[in-house]
Amino acid sequence: MPATTSKATAAIMITVFAGAAVPLLAQSTPPVQLRPEQIQQATTETPLQTAGFGTPDATARIAAKAGFVDVVGIKLGTPLKAALAALKTHNPNLVMQPLAMPSYEALPGTTMTPLLMSAKGTNTSSPDEKEHVGLLATMPPGESFIWGIWREVSYEKEESRPTVETIMAGLRKKYGQESTKDMSNNPIWMYDAQGQQVPAAKTNEVMAKCVSTWTVGLSMPLSQAQWGYFDRQLVGGYFNASYGRDSMNGLCLTYSHVTASLDVRISSKSSPPLVASVRVVAMNRQLEASGVTASHGLLMREATRLAEQRKGEAGKREVPKF
Image (cartoon, rainbow, N blue to C red; front, side):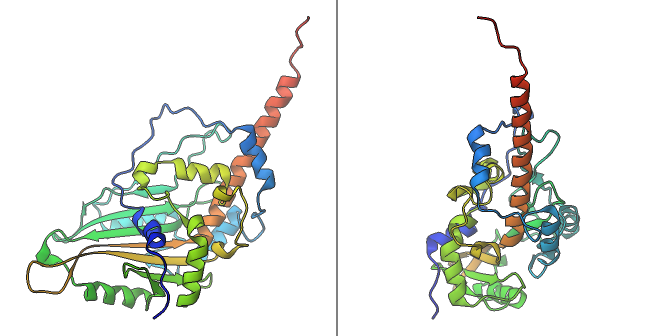
């Protein structure tokens, strides 16, 4: 029996998406101004922008190779516009609401849209099922690509609920045998950058080392976190929690994973345990990190330019007579 990841680790990765509709920021929110120390920190970060990573072109190349994992037919790495069109074909009832990020003073006219999410409990073609879908997308300066997607399907009537064995058979048919399980027996699949599944021992090692870097929205629903998490990434970089330093030397930048969380209920009848809802989450961390790095680099360059411009303008002002 392979070692399992901690329950807390899996909970962070799987349950942070339980929020309802994402609240939009008021249009009157003033542009965000970066402080001098935030700009200065960028000079001490681990250098991630290279020809093969952290630029718009590099992010597009990574996206083109990320399609070995999909949820409801939407592959990771799909351009955002194509993903939205595919979702509309999948379920016309889905209305994807964007998270409204504040504008940045250094990037006038640039809109950042890292997250789109449907209302919870959206009707499907089946009267027995409801669904909830979310998309995580890269941001400017390059094209927007899907680096994360989740889908939760809920079965409100007990008589329509599938068994655990039925759900697991479907997941294994799609993703293969799981790489490992958490302490709640929820399955986890992990893949390297080439799309090859990672063995259990390596999966547990990577998750133990990378969970703090991979946290999305901390331990709260994104509807509560709102834009704060993504703002910290844009301003502080991918490794904002460790002041721009990659303590794992690239380990956390090369994997994709799929996680499934099952809400299992004991039937009132003499039947096996039934699944009231199942949430599947897929993420490509290499695509996420490259996209964040490109966006962070853009913001830091423009904020530095703006600060230098203002410094020069201040130096030209007349000195008052004393």
